[in-house]
Length: 79
Image (cartoon, rainbow, N blue to C red; front, side, top):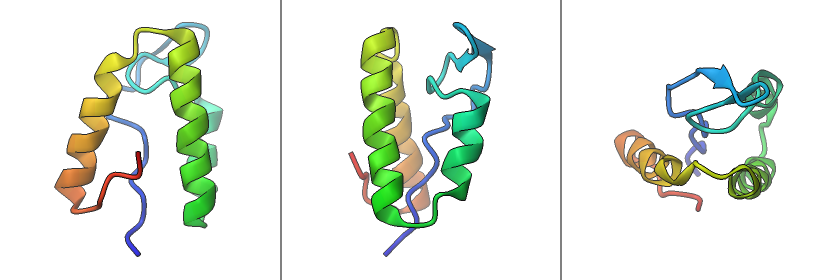
């Protein structure tokens, strides 16, 4: 099974109360995702992140950018 790519889409500008304007993760969340080894934990993290983005709003660009990232890495999108 292929490793799930990080939800980071390489924008990395932390505004909006410490959340990245590209993916909505905080710096702590970014480091947390890197520590997750099991695919089930990574998928659960992505679900949490999508809910967080929906609550915060203005992250409709993320899904397409993440799908492109998965395609580039040759990994089926976990979404």
